[in-house]
Image (cartoon, rainbow, N blue to C red):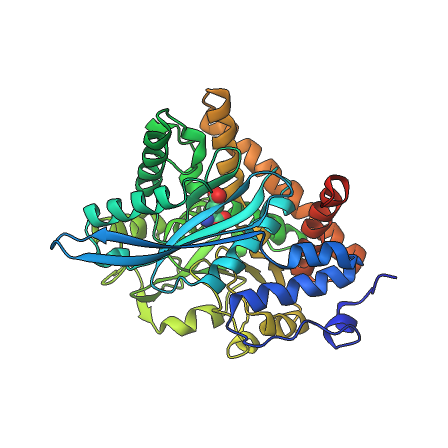
Length: 434
Ligand code: GLU
């Protein structure tokens, strides 16, 4: 029998999985997975298959640094599931990368691909490093070493990396080249998010931000918020946040606050996003010193008096510490895992709608899929075709999740997990185990 009310689930009639550490992204992911599995009535067999990653690879990568010394970096690739197809997910370069984080991000990729119904499983990779303090040559050698260490893991029909935090088209080009050299033939479909000339797709760079914009507009429609009268604050002014802000501004939304690692910037008349992007591009990627807005404390951004907040930076920024101070009616998660599991209940109690990460930021992997399809076809689509198809997938996926949230009487996040888990579970039932 399906529980009809999420409060019953959250309040303990059905025990949520214990959360050992609220800041641990893997525990956060598991707690939502557990709640959604209960709501869905998932059987134990499938639950057990999906609760742990299918494969975890940890490698040591000795790299010659510019000064001639050798530094050994730790690299990871976790394949959470290949049930829906080859596993898919980015590779993150950051000092905070560790196995637990990569495991959570890999599982999120499974749910993300499943919620938008693209034929991929989920994976994630990472290297514990600080790319900001490394030279281009050092990053290139590290990227090639990682690719060769993962040569038997990656493959256009096996496991397909893409950019994530700290990586972009440049790193994807090196990965594609190292992999292709090792096999003696060009295999451009082994990696997505490549530069255009190497078989990258038009629209891929802006895809995640565009998907966030589409999700925001569909959610606003449900909440009867007129974009032309709406205000928004965006945390993170990287690829996802800046593109989402720009595309929303183009559709009438007033973006009154943005932030990046240098701090937060506020202008109640609306920030000129193009100007802000130009400033950032000419200022070494930083908003520091931006005069188109006044500086405010970074932690104030998420609790501003706005209609929409878009956390598009990193994990665990909405926690029990600040969730009760949020004034927005809508949270659209551009980042992966920006809300800790313990903050969910507070947000639900306040009646705030959440377009959850696995739905809202799925535009990136959707266009990665289009890139892979184009590579396999040996063909190139126009930007219009890419955008049109992605917009359609994002809208349809949002509607599917919204419908499930009404049907099961659960918030959008749990509904997204329900849709995703159901897709993977049904596929697993047909495919079977050993
Ligand atoms: N790293 C992105 C994400 O978290 C993109 C993954 C991909 O395109 O495979 O969704």
